[in-house]
Image (cartoon, rainbow, N blue to C red; front, side, top):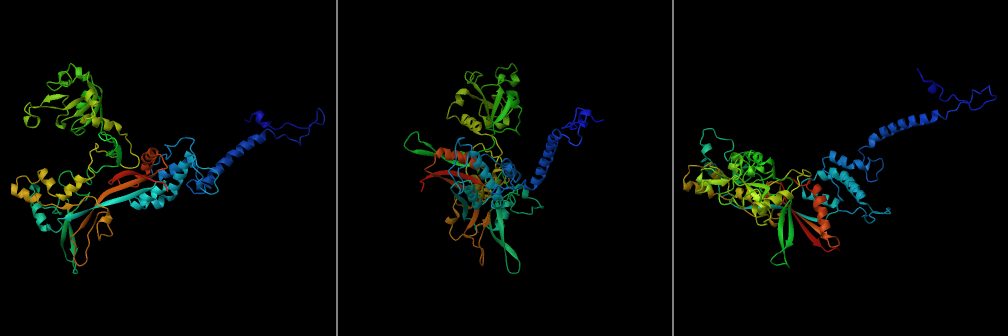
Amino acid sequence: MTHEAIKNLDWTFTRQTTDDIEEYESIDTSRILPVLKVWGRQYDDIKRYIDNIKYITNITYNKQNNTPDYFISDTLEMGGWETGTLTTTWDNDMVTDVLYSGHQTGYTASEVNIETLRRLKLNSPYLLRMKGTVKGIKYLLGLLGVEAEVTEYVRQVESGIGDYTYEELVELNGWKTDMQSEVLPDDLLTGLTLKNIVEYDETGGSQSAMVVPWYDGRKQYDGDTYFQMKGGWGKYVREVPNVEYPESAVTIDEWSETMSNLKFAATMDDMSRMGGLVVKTGDICYVESIYEFSSDNEDRKYTPKPGTESTDTVENASHYFILENGDYSRILGWGYTGDTSDTGSTGGCYGWKSITEQELNDPNNTAATKVHYYESIIDNNLGNNPHSGDGIYDGGEEFFNRLKHPFEQGIESGQYDGLSDEDLAELTSVTYGISDSLEPTAITAVTGLTSKVKYYKEEEVDKSYYILNDKALKIKFKISSEFDIQVYKDYITKNVLLYLEQMIPSTTITHYEFESVRSS
């Protein structure tokens, strides 16, 4: 049933001829018109939304019929980028110079960020085709307004190629205890960081040309060898004052990690229950409550080492503990194991050892240094895979040392137990000489380097050199003298690296340097 007020909404009459007679032809619409306009506006908004669906992914330089600026970062993230603000180091009132003809003003910080993301989106198809290449890295840096020198490195196998035949190496590898079987693996060099290079003659026949150092991530090797072990991620070369000679500076390496290995536990008892699969020797744990120091439960009470009872106390303790022996992670403090071979004549050792406040403030204390290092790491997973290595890096040197000595890991892991000293000496004599990192231009007559290996053949295989991919990359950022050096470094480390690291393969060992250059 329709309400009377609605039925008679506009049935009011505007003119009257007499007090009793009204003109029905003239009807007042002033009340219904606003309702119709509101109703029509809703349809207009819906139509506008429908019309703009075809423009929702449009991003162009002229900004006509574009998606709103607010959604540009979302569009990039849907395309695989991790985005962030590029102008975090700017003051709110900063404005650029006039950059383009026809413009009257420069860009604010917000506009710089939006316009950079716009250009990143527009150039992404071209840019992502070059992902992982020096050309792609330079292109991205140019887009972000950064001048840098980018150099990738290789290593040259200098000796050993051709010295050991495939048959000889197969025979030596057959000395392994698990190879003494009638059922042999398909790869007779299994476990060794070696590969047999085969050449074919005109009839299609094959023969071993040479055996070279090699790593394949799909294979299992002796020991715990993995690609570029201890390589590191994001190495910064920083200059600090020399304490002994203030007029000079000392260069130190800082490694960028994205995941801290600091452990956490509510109580000391919880810490001791983590188990060997969770913790290992050298791990640091922060314990929220350390009441077990004075617990009445002798089984779960912290025990100081004999002779340290006056210093290793709850009053001197910090909340940090270091696991000194991973085999005894159940022990809080000092414990007697009865094993005198590993722990000394006393038969005792530390499991979890308290780090005292005095040790924590000692700059020369190894455990304290580790605590401060862990605390300095801010966990994040933006830009690339998580990287964590306790700050113990060597630029991949250990990996190449294992390539130099292919049998060494098998010997250390017990694969050749029972061999005579003479036989072990023969295994260790198999070595390959590998150079330090070299720029590709430093290797003469080498062209067309591939990402893994290149050997060269005319009538026969040239065994004089062989190239390994170092996976090392150095980026030297050029800082113009007209800029504040620290502000520029902050811009690089806090803003640019987020995007740059998405262009660099996660296995690459990246070195960052900064060089001040005089502006032209």
